[in-house]
Image 1 (cartoon, helix red, strand yellow):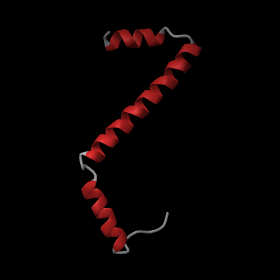
Image 2 (cartoon, helix red, strand yellow):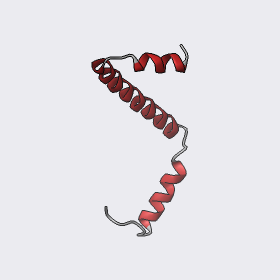
Image 3 (cartoon, rainbow, N blue to C red):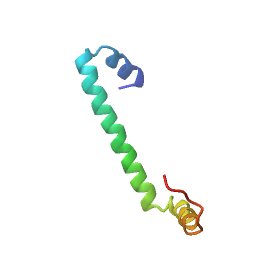
Image 4 (cartoon, one colour):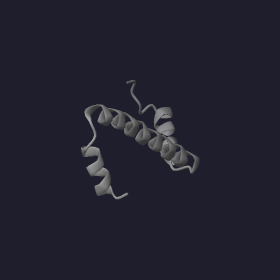
Length: 65
């Protein structure tokens, strides 16, 4: 199915169907985001940022929120 076919199908949904679809799609996107973040963490992509944050904290360059 193409993106255009999906767009057309979505425009034909009833309000209730659109609400259900929207909720499902938001959950789908959130889960995909979580999987990507977890993969990035396992791959070490945040290690340098974490080290900089720790160094800033230890040097007293952080303020409470």
